Length: 570
Ligand SMILES: *[C@@H]1O[C@H](CO)[C@@H](O)[C@H](O)[C@H]1NC(C)=O
Ligand SMILES: *[C@@H]1O[C@H](CO)[C@@H](O)[C@H](O)[C@H]1NC(C)=O
Ligand SMILES: *[C@@H]1O[C@H](CO)[C@@H](O)[C@H](O)[C@H]1NC(C)=O
Ligand SMILES: *[C@@H]1O[C@H](CO)[C@@H](O)[C@H](O)[C@H]1NC(C)=O
Image 1: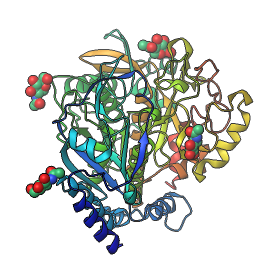
Image 2: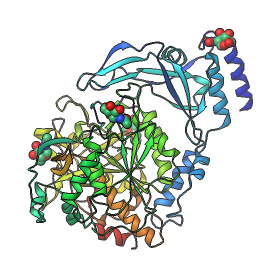
Image 3: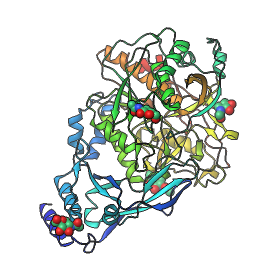
Image 4: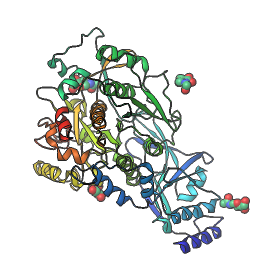
């Protein structure tokens, strides 16, 4: 390998004037057109400077993955023996040959990369659009989403030298586009403001049309008593300038958790200059905060806010989040992430990089809950035009726990309202193969689907969601108003709160936290209420039906706290 690097240096210096004249290139990704309703408006300004990131081949991801499954699978001798940050980085660090191969290529433009991720597997370089175009045989341009006005500077294709294929997995930002919704990456929908004089009803029947923290406590058996272990934290992720409003939080707690001190708050952890500006309340951040701080009684909550310059067209929220989280030594034991985008908006290499980042966090014992999306089988697409069912990232990553949605009570059913094109995100990845922990359940489910669905979904891949909770008519406070909201953005913090409370009990009992939860979940389906009816119609089909056992709309079902507790040996 040393010889190869030497050879590359020689080649690169020969190629000073034009970096490609002597190199054949390998196209890493190409799309025929921008995704969704993005259209190209202009070439990107040639002298615009930005940071380009190169994710290098990781030393031994296969070993990390194997370790992740061993320590997360109940009954395995290594169960609960989570890795440290350093141990993870050792498995992920790139080979020095990859670093020198990258730098000798960059030297053709007099550029040098800097280590960016803590393991050094991601390196970044600051350059102009013109230089990036030259280096990657790319054509960076400005794209604007016709529905939301969201801007993105991206290229429709990019290449690297053939001889760097074994060294570079992905370059970003390139062909992965941001979520098309302005303001926040994934939609929860705001509806009417509820009457602020509403009395908090304890009667379960009211939970059908007005879902509060007491409803979640009652339905899922969540304890109301305060956690005791101050070392056990719960992290709420905020992307795309979504911030928690403190006045809204206090109003929410006073009405819906009068038993908690109204001053109950959270701490702020900043990634890439993220702030928590009180001048604008984010509906997503408010909801996520209220259903963690308001449910995970006594658990210290951290708001992990990822910075984004206003309307920054270069921004890539998910890679930035992963890179930031991997840098943090003392992470919360549970993360709640209510953001998603269709797989078709990103690209395999970028999604895979993000997903492998989640595996690294899982290996450190972190449970990660991700919203499955709110548009059922249509994703963000036009429900009348879709030819195949959409898959949502990062829910489609096999190393996280994807959370779907339900509605109603007695019985609680899968969330899907055809007229509104609102439904639990659902389906099968086109990127990630089916993991072993869900194989038996997913194959059994595929057998009950009509054969008319053949070709609409990917039969060999990861099915999601894994679990579900209530996602409609959720009471919360936004901009000083009692309001209701629909979305898996609500069910996700509920599951995260439950995991954090279980971790509190595990820590108190001297045990390891749950960590990556899926192998445990599929081995303990009885610890969930099976949701057996409802579906998410879309794409001119009935969508995915909820059935007895796992299904691709509510997973194994909604949580039953006391059963989860005993399954964990508590
Ligand atoms: C790189 O720097 C050298 C020395 O400063 C200069 O001669 C050369 O033109 C530069 N090459 C490029 C591609 O900028
Ligand atoms: C939220 O869900 C409820 C129940 O399905 C529905 O009546 C309401 O219209 C939804 N809100 C919006 C804005 O779609
Ligand atoms: C908060 O946002 C407001 C309005 O956008 C802005 O004027 C103010 O400077 C921001 N404050 C901080 C601390 O970022
Ligand atoms: C189906 O998923 C697999 C991964 O499980 C992927 O390799 C394949 O490309 C997908 N098929 C299509 C048509 O996208």
